[in-house]
Length: 505
Image (tube, rainbow, N blue to C red):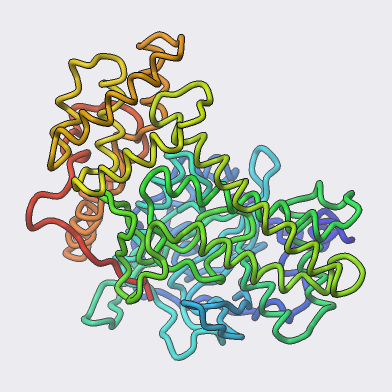
């Protein structure tokens, strides 16, 4: 098994001091990608640079804000050490398999290693056509760039594994969608862009040699502890199952709906990737769907764990030629691994629910207690985020119950549940203020509400960016009480609710 250190030694030595590229994926066989040149932007303009993330990646944020930096972020200049490629992958889209998808409007510039020794991809989204564009223009409208910047950085602040946004730039030209829209380019940062669909790409072609190269690369990059296992590919699969089960639980605990959980949008690093028609719920309902293309609710909120498990089953199918000795043993091993998904998910989900309800110990009826609250919230159109945030105060002082009751269409529904909740809390010795503090750290005040995102996008399309910048700043501290930004915690007023979100293509 070749190490990433050995691969990266052959990378160009003249990498720019401002972006310390150290590429490994571009050293893999060319069946994995197409070498491309980003399209140029006629009049690039900087919208935002993520200073803290840049410093983490050992990149000078002031350089990124300079004309030279903006030229790189827009695709107009290829930095020394960058090796632009479009990655190949396949995928199941709404259950139907497409043997070739790939980066149709994204270009991987290269990799950097941060101050802690962790490797990250730098990718431009909206940077022009590739051979995977399937008739598209390869460009991105400004709206999807802003949405991904806002939501991905909010997810990071919430503590949920995610791709990140390093920068957003304006291209100075329009793109044609349902109407003429200003164009933009997002610089995305990810632990990698390896997807379940990347493995499907080679498995569909019967290319076991490159499938093994890919699996070895993924193990070395993301799960190096699997190398020493008796069956490294089984250990690798087990690790991905556990990571994605925990990720799905984290989504469910904050009311996040991905929107397009295709296998090509399922990252094997266990990070949330591809923020197209994603959304956070306002009023809670398990069947909530936002994506304009999810006509049958395949990717509804409550379906997400089962969909991730389905995607992992497809992933297992790609690894069968590498696992154990003989097809029967490989299938048996894969089935044993996927059966662990529910255990991983339930453990993470229940632990998170306990934190949200202020429970420090484990009790036999805790899941039923949480489930009954959620059912009552759905029946009474209670806001997901505000209900759990208000519980933080009610847990410390019953005099704060009106703040929770007011969120329920039938306030007495909360009263009935609260009796059981307080009986459960009475079994614990933790002081009320300590419980409140712990709950505040588990229940955010601020989420990227859909109507706020849409307002920021509409203003940006008109050339005004204050709402975008302020929203990013507010969401950087989601668990803090910040009275000056109280309006950002409110659900949409009548007429403001966003019922559908759209893909960014």
